[in-house]
Image 1 (cartoon, rainbow, N blue to C red):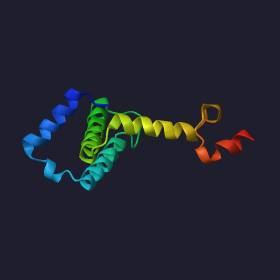
Image 2 (cartoon, helix red, strand yellow; image 1 turned 90 degrees about the horizontal axis):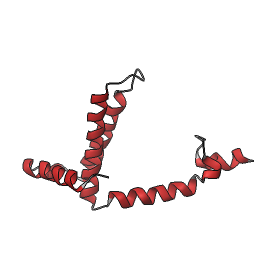
Image 3 (tube, rainbow, N blue to C red; image 1 turned 30 degrees about the horizontal axis):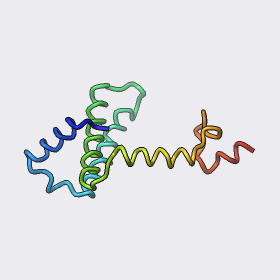
Image 4 (tube, rainbow, N blue to C red; image 1 turned 120 degrees about the vertical axis):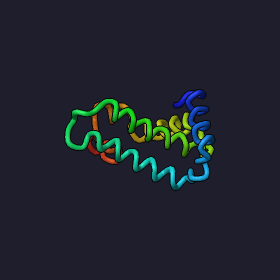
Length: 111
């Protein structure tokens, strides 16, 4: 998760420009999707990619995710850990290790 220094820098950047007024949860969610599409575009036609551009687009995605979490008042560490716990229950190691199978099909493959 972002460090305290990174969070402070993001908040200062937005405050200096008075952009928080534009950062509704809806607008931030849209921006995450748009930036994620731009990240995906880096890999559109080839597995070769421009590392600098990928890092820039990834930073945009993460930045908007941090802004959305801040706007919603959620702790990123907390929600990620909770989601990992939920996903671990769906994908027990003994069924899922080394497999790309969706959790709804894991038990079928074991039979």
